[in-house]
Length: 414
Image 1 (cartoon, rainbow, N blue to C red):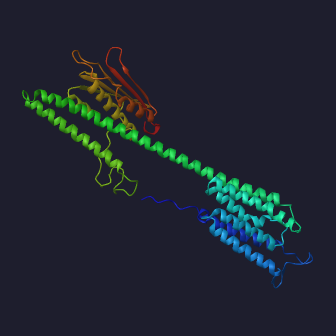
Image 2: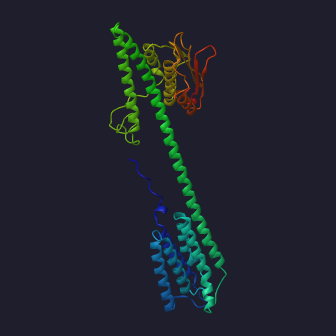
């Protein structure tokens, strides 16, 4: 079974942990920045440790507690978590005697805003950034109302960091949503393409066999009393066609039951269905002669002519070429009302050419239908289009119908 690849190391750390680490690093930076070297004034740090007033230490402890709780709730309750982180930033600013909320005290909030914007709906992230901007403006305003001095030198820049963090997270969310939509669209297109491929295979395989079976059954019913030997031959041909059809259906169902690539020789492998029984090989141009013999035995003479040097082809071209010949011959059997057709296969230097022509209905034979009334021509056109080839199918001026195909051959197999 395929397993999901592990996340990158940095992605394994939850956002709350990043916010906590950011707060600790920023606080350590703020404390270290407060150290005054000898001769520069009173030192915050002295030889025997930290020399902060007791109320400042209490504010720093409160800030630590609020921040850690907010980080723990960030994944489950983002808005309450942001409120706690903002409260911690205020407590940190008070502990450091800040007249404003500086960058270090606000970095953990920025990390939280980016995470919420990246993982939550737009409404939640908008509320979060509004709370953050409100605190940036409200803190100095509250100090001003109670008569404390305030600082405004960095408040605008701190507000800008909050907006930038929100924009980064929102951009990450939009990128992820776009990638998910592309993935869903690609999956839907793959399912549609697979359904069309299965439809073409079923049509080409079953339609030909049913056409041969119908002809042979009709012939057997007409001669069963007068020519039992020929009736037995027709019934034998029906049995062979039925077995070939069942074999093809079994191969297709086995391919549909494959789960995923695994170890060679295990169920679900190419060439081996889920029950572990080997599948028959896919048909190719090497089977055209057998197709011609079976169709001729059913009453429609098929003349196969080869041109150029026969050489191996890529599997997709080989199978598609056979299916095109098979469907063209099937159309002759079912619709043309004639007794013969000619198949020409030419191996060129850069392409494979296929032409199937019939002379039209014989006198006294009606035309059972038009080659364009089913899915045969559509399937052939789709096959050729997938291989970047050229396809034409039209009545001939002198009577009958002509199918012509040109398939480019990759340079590596010419």
